[in-house]
Length: 269
Image (cartoon, rainbow, N blue to C red):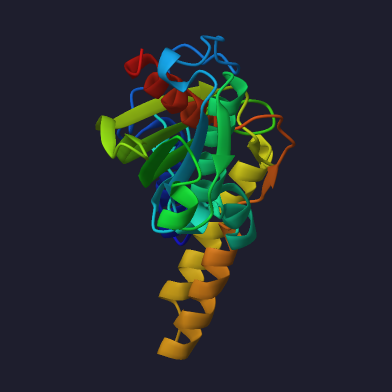
C-alpha cells in the first residue's frame, strides 16, 4: 500500500512526458509544406534600374523577433524549462533583423542591380543615387522543429522556417522625387535539417521521468516552505533540456529575405 502513491505519481509523469512529445496543438501546420529552394532564380534588374545607381536603406533595429523550438509529433512548442539556453537563443535570434537586411540588399545586387547599402538616414547620401529603396522589417518569426531524441523518437519534422514581414517598401527616383512603388510584403522559407538537436536518448527521457517523480514526492513531504523550494529547484534542474546546435550553410531567414527582394524586382517590371 505504501508504494501506491509513488507508482501513481510515476505514471502521471510518464503520461506528461508522452504528452510533451506526442500531444498538444499543432502550432503552424507547415510540416507538409515543401522545402524552399536556397537560391533564387536569376531574373535580372528591371529596366528602370539599368545602368543606374540604387541606394538601399533598411530599418531593422526595432524588428519584433518571435518563434521558438518545437518537439514531438504534434510540434509542441517547448516551455522555458525544456528550451534552449540563452546563449543558444542569442545565436539563432540575436541578429535576425540585421541578417535579413543584409540578405535583402545582397540579393538585389546578385540580380544585377548596382546597389549601395546605406547605414544612416541622410538626404545628402540619398541624392548621390539615381534611385532609393527603403523598407522596414517589422517582424521575423523563426521556428525550429527538432528531430526528437537521438533515436528519432518524437520528431517534430526536423526542419526550420522563417517568416519575414517587410513594411513601407518604397522605391523612389531621387532627383524627380517620383515614387515608383510603395507597399508591404510577407515572405516564407523552410529548410532541412533542423540545426537544433536534442541530445537525449529515449532511455534518458524515461530516467528523467522516474527521477522527477521521486523529486515531486520529496516536495510533497517537505517540512518547510524552504525545503519545498529547494526540492522544486532540483525538479526544474532535472528537466533542463540538453541541446546542441549543429553547423548550417544557410538559414531560412536569408532565403525569405532574398525572396522579398525578388518580389520587389518583379513588381517594378
